[in-house]
Length: 368
Image (cartoon, rainbow, N blue to C red; front, side, top):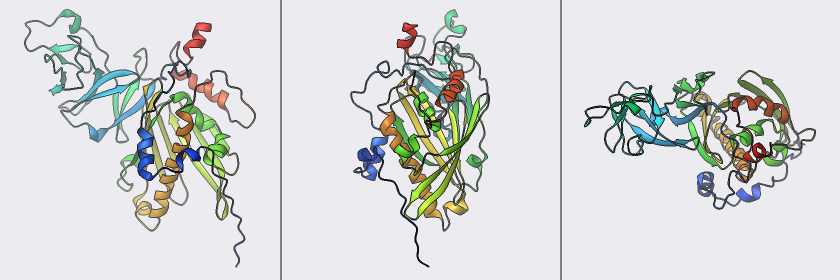
């Protein structure tokens, strides 16, 4: 039988000119390399604050009992440690005594964090100084709450931190994903990026249907089924992908709980769960870590090549997006045309994650 299928691949997308000449090693370095001479957050309208929610910041296995590490997220310096009871705690990094950064050289004393400078020992729940080994008395200013403490959860192999600019308590919980702890699924295949942009722009990408054709090379604009909850949303995007043998129907189901927890399930020939671990570092910088897991019988069997190809293709798509995101500004009053997707609806939904005064560039706040 003669194969009469027509090659339906689209021409290379415009952003590919930035990526096509990179070797594998160069591309991996480019994903996390800093960008020189980038505009300020204010110049790009990225000074909109951070949306509140749960954010994954570190793989749980990377923090051992008795270990202290520095961290920087939400434009704040932080210190995180795992006490002798196995619980993870986090406080703002700087000691109230003389300002030492407790994430660098600090140590765990029982379940307390000990400052490396003078051994002041902080509690991770109440945010008070519990012990000063050389002092006869603890100053009253630090016997009451003197530093911010952070809500921490451990789920899906990650440590999660609750961020709210006003330190409000969590309004919802982290969603447990059964595949992440299923022994019949592979260990995470992990890929990391630094995106020099805002979480707002990155999140909107999921409902920007027109970009699938011009950034990712889909043959047509995709169709979608969207649902919106109080704090969560779900989208099923269907698109025809051009291949050497003609059109192939593709679909992905993406879910999110708040701005910080997102996961995507790919079904079909090889099931794949992508846990997208994204957290703001600065107003114009995101830590993005993609964790993939697949059924072992598929990923390690005859279809192993296909399983790897799925992961490689998703990584390529994020590379394509990164070319734009790294230099993109936020448009608070965008001009939308038909077939763009429900961007205004998304913005209305997403605005609930900003505390009062956030979500708007400073230039607009001054103008108002």
